[in-house]
Image (cartoon, rainbow, N blue to C red; front, side, top):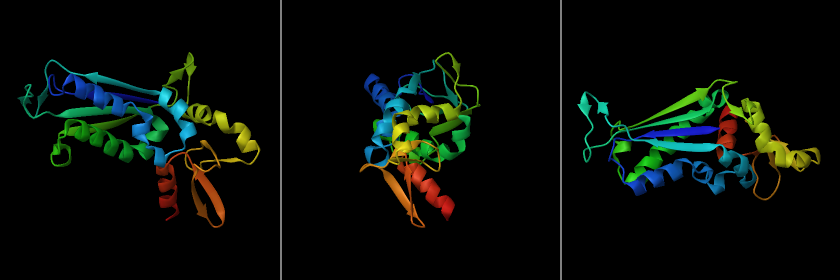
Length: 198
């Protein structure tokens, strides 16, 4: 579901920093912290995260070669299912920038345009799992599968924003609107749903 590519000039990150930033960008726990997601969604969600770190031999930015030991610049490309791109972009840009700033201990990503984040939507029909085309709706089904019986029993509801089935337990992220309780897979879905209500 999420393929993340980090481009860093050769030598800009130590081996330990490369590993830390890759693990941060590749962890659903880092992507959506415990307090902001339903834990049951993480299994499927996490299995679909992949991160690759590239260190090109030559990188030119603004007409100058980025030399080892000099001020670094970074590009993060995050590939998501196309229908999710618009809704996820703001969060992904903030999340990826924070990951780099935290691991490098560098405040420049918030002061200078040294981290570019590109959120790329993979067109419907462009993702394959199990040897077949896997549309975004199928990914939602995979994330919901453990709770299908709970939905039928009235112990779970569909997230009104993304469609993921969420169990109505103590960990549920909810919002009551006009006497109706809505549950969400994560705080981001809840916040976007609330914003749409005005």
